[in-house]
Length: 217
Image (cartoon, rainbow, N blue to C red; front, top):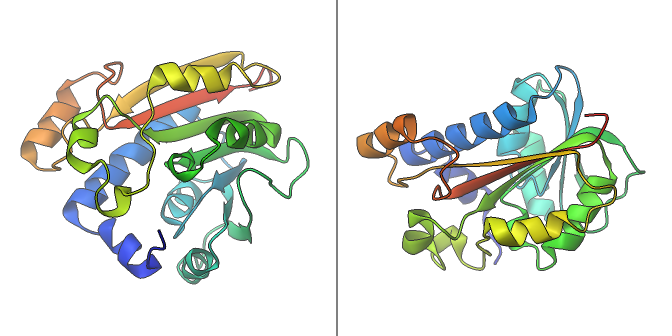
């Protein structure tokens, strides 16, 4: 499904979208713990929303996406940041092995029909570690949004399935950790209170974050 970049980005500037994206970005960065100035590939960057967040956190970011309209929007909204954009498919990246310190894929694998293959390719170009943001099937968000709006066509994953992808990686990660966020997806006061009180180790958040590290990470 083709999305209008401006309409897609507009959601991030609603109160709910701003809160959800902020929680997701904070969790990914907390798990990854990247060194300032390190290079990061944002795979499936879309409008560059998370690419900009990563760059604002002090990283040198390259965003890749197969959609030229999304990339055009991203380029025009990234002035002044250490950011570059390349048109590419996550399953066949035009980069040598270990090209980037870190890799991030924020819900982009949810729209890739071969997630395990894409993950292997992302792992190939990583030097230190990788972080994924996935849509969690064991969540209230799934019950309310599955098959609707911008979620139409998205795959919702379960940690047990993701572990099967990880078992295919070479070399195997020396460290892996997963957490969830967005327990109540409404974005109002009850959702924010739940987010503050519930531990990320619970498996029911709508956003499933997975961090992997290599032996030099």
